[in-house]
Amino acid sequence: MSEDLCVTRIPLLKDGEIAPGPVLDAVRGRRKGQLLALDRLLLHSAPVAEGWNFMMGKVRSDLALSPMLRELAICAVAVHNQASYELLHHAPLYLEYGGAQAQLDALRADPLAAETSPLFNAAQRAVLTMTRESTRDVRIGEATFAEVKRVLGEDRLVFELLVTVASYNMVSRVLVGAGLHEES
Image (tube, rainbow, N blue to C red; front, side):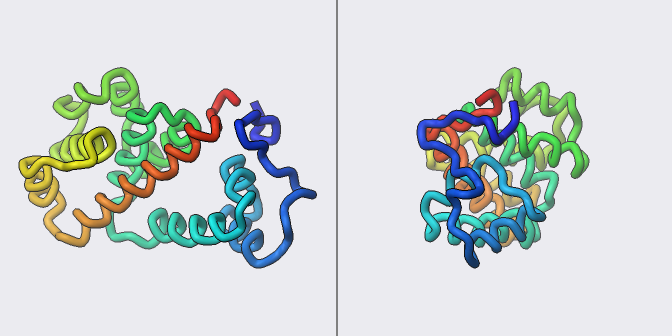
């Protein structure tokens, strides 16, 4: 179904309902002129939309973390939180950055089993485990943190993974809470 026809708990703003100005311009700029259904939800609050656009733009574009690992973490957050809209938008990016369809299928089928699957390399498995622990338990185990640090090798990359997982948990909680799903 078209994003224009999404039905959510909070109605998505139509073009004529969105206040013109720098916030809208910034969101459109990051989205190459388009507005996603998520943007039409966020624009109910210009301060939220502005902060969200800035932060998520940085998380998506300016980190040193491998884009493939970033997208794997985002897809894992989406699976754990049943955020179908998030998965719909990030699964293609994971594939674009070198992930495999078989890996996505395994993650969707059983995210816990994916953490030990030979379909994923050591770095990917560590990312999946850290993502689950952070998403489900908030606390990340010492062994998991040590393994992530070992496979990523730099504190900056570990921190950027941590921030990516936390950021997309925020995204999924807004999507699921507002009832914005791919089938909406």
